[in-house]
Structures are given as structure tokens and as C-alpha cells.
Length: 147
Picture 1 (cartoon, rainbow, N blue to C red):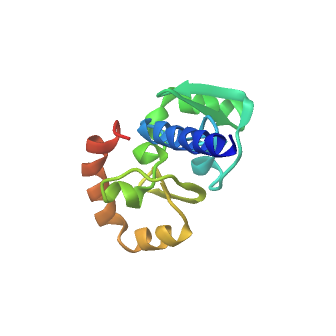
Picture 2 (picture 1 turned 45 degrees about the vertical axis):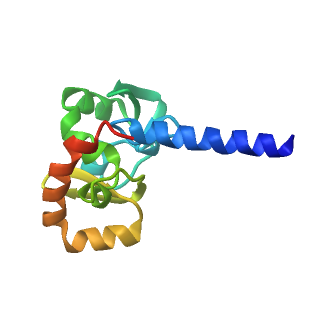
Picture 3 (picture 1 turned 135 degrees about the vertical axis):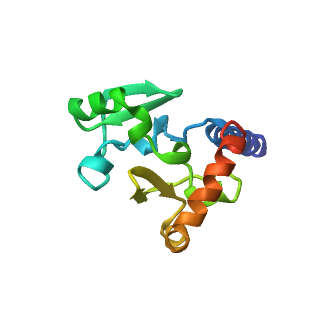
């Protein structure tokens, strides 16, 4: 019985990860960019946790905000504040696949928000940023709706 429960748990985990990566937006714990306020990366130049009470649905994801002002800014221009490649790893996207991200790997380049898998990947990405952004821009339309 324990073995069956372990197998069921593993299958549920695999299913939830596959579903999250099928989404155009990287969703963790039901929230886009792990519940951080996308506007704050631009206005405060740092990650700021959003509030459950200040949320907005966009592209089948729940986005949280730290203030009503940031929510209104996002509503007016979500494409300006939403991370590139749905919040998936910019380096991975350039390689033609979706990868989860860590919030502390954020970068704003030419007014656009990017995330990476981890800080080591971010270091590699920063060395080739322009070329990888070009590659990722080509790859993203091909992979954004795929698991």
C-alpha cells in the first residue's frame, strides 16, 4: 500500500510540473513569478512580494501586487511589466526549452524583465545577453504553448 501511495504521489508531482510548464506563464504555487510584484522590479529595482488581496488575472495566471498603484500600472500595460518568456528562464528559452526560475535572478534589459533558472545560469546568461535574447525571441513563439 505504501508503494502505491508513493507512486501516486510521484505521478501527481510529475503531472503538476508538466501542467505548470505547459502554461504560457511560469506559475509556482498558483501564482505568476512566485507571487512577486512585477511592477516593483521596475519601480523599486528589487523583488517585492505581492499581496493576496491585490491580485489580477492575466494570461490564465494570478499576479500579485504590493500596491494598488502597481496593480493599475500593470492593468494599463501588462506587456510592459510582465516578464519575457512568461517568466521562464531566458537562458533556457534561448536553448529551446522552458525552465523554472528563481526570483533573485531577475534583470531588466532595455526596459524588459528577464529571469533565469539560478544565479549560476544568470552569470552565464549575462556574458552573452544580447545574443541569447535574440535566440530566445526566436524560440519563444515555438515553445510557449508546449509542455
